[in-house]
Length: 113
Image 1: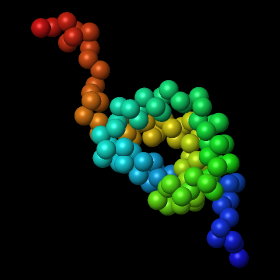
Image 2 (image 1 turned 90 degrees about the horizontal axis):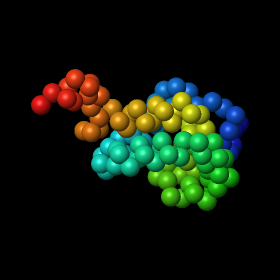
Image 3 (image 1 turned 60 degrees about the horizontal axis):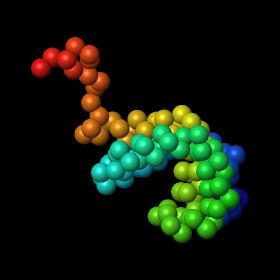
C-alpha cells in the first residue's frame, strides 16, 4: 500500500500528464492575456530553472497552499520544469495562439511599401 501523502520524486511524469499540465499552464496564461510577459519570464529565467525546481522541491510543503491542486500539483510542475525541453514546449504552447505571434516578415516584404 502506498502512502497518499508521499510524492515519489523518482517516478517519471508520463507524456500525457505532462502535456495536460503544460496545456493547463498555457491556457491560464492565455486567458489572462499574459503571453508576452510569460514568454519573456521563461526565456530570461531559462538558465535558473534547474535551481528553481530544486527550491520548489524544498519549499513544496509550504508553497502547496497557494496552488489549487495542493502540494502534489506543485511537485508535478516542479518536476516538469527540471527538464529544458518542457520549458521550451511550454513557451511554444503559450505562443501558439498568441495574437502577436506571426510568421517572420521577409526582407522583401519589409521593404515593399
